[in-house]
Image 1 (spheres, helix red, strand yellow):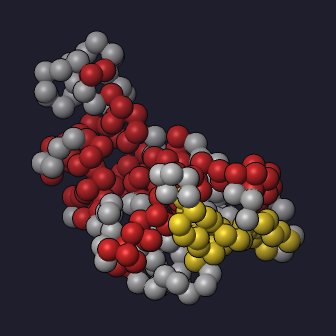
Image 2 (image 1 turned 135 degrees about the horizontal axis):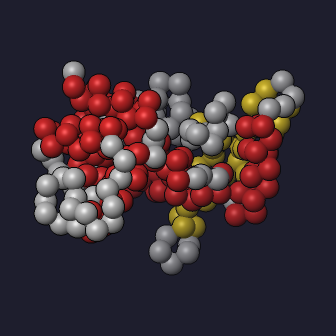
Length: 213
């Protein structure tokens, strides 16, 4: 059993302490996974819904998210429902996943910060007919992530900022920001620089290439 699977199994114990209706399954010849029920609570801490799910260890966890499936056929396998054709959840855009993983993710924080909000959103859609919060699919969703991170919708500027981050070391805290705003770097794009840089040079170059096509 490799270190990725061992880490997943070790973290499962803490996750189960927070979500006691989940159970760990592991074998020497297969990916470990958590399976069971996630209960959803309203703002008054009253349970209002529940989902049966399976959380599978990804081969490169924690550099990427585990794969999450709903196991009772409640959610359609349709990208408009943010469920891929094989049944695993589309939790966020790729760049958001890279950033979350670079900052450090555990099974517990993954379930709390990604899976539970996703399921709340699914319950909201079932009731209201639309998602309360969602990203678009494909390139449009990636761009929406970048709009928020870089605080601009100017595609030329986004490309320029990403290219700078790829090629350059961070400015000093007291320097003017590389975006040209005239503000101090520490009060402008400092957090954005480190978030984008954290995904790694290879992923960043791929992102720049996508935007350049």
